[in-house]
Length: 350
Ligand code: MRU
Image (cartoon, rainbow, N blue to C red; front, side, top):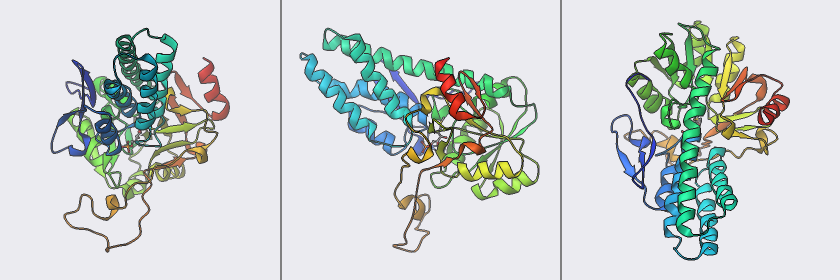
């Protein structure tokens, strides 16, 4: 990433601090989250967002939440911990990293059987640190794995933001771009704007530009034209939850990009750390898709409303790309090819 680094979530001297991504790119403002309500709100409002970063924020958020759990009674603490985890898990439904991280924190508490509340707090913090460190290592491994599929000088299209801002470091699908940049690959990246919350415009364009990567911003409806010109050699995207059969939920609009890529014979790579694979979901239809306020379509980002007052809206935050459109799934443990039903299972047996 050159000299540029960004930490969307950090835990320093007992303080949980996030970069408020709703204010980028015009303002770089860090905010301390001191209560479980503040953590919930930051996740719900996408101040911290992107599946892995949500998981890390939730793990540290749970350490913050249990500060209100009392000092003496371990049984009461255990109950309070579980209630706080259930509350945080309700902030956003689609990215499985949220419930995955919280479940892992509780499993750690149960396994370690702390003898005091003080020890329990220490154990939880150590597990949150491990979740963050493992995420960073997974991103680096996905970067190396993904880079093996790319050639110098390629044109690469991405949708939404699965970069450094969405993870502990490097990103998932932007990790190979950063590694390639360090090694002189000279990629040309096209970033979809990603309506309605503009993660492509505000976040992907920001972090790639800061890192010195050649990035060109396009509106979502321009992807087909750019592909038809022959400017795109590969599509790379992140994932919020992958089902056992390889269907992958990601930011709304990803499915359309995948269909366009297939039509133009362009490989479509989905970057999915194993923490984002949910084998309990048999297929994409088992993935709950978050629906958000219609105001995000009607007026957010506009100086005045752009839609007629009272018009109906439909605002799903994610869509599911069927497995048949995904050329390969890039994980930290290796590259998975179809048939995904079989090969994703094998990955977990490794
Ligand atoms: O609504 P967001 O901004 O949290 O959506 C983010 C995405 O869809 C990302 O592509 C996904 O979480 C993967 S992040 C490495």
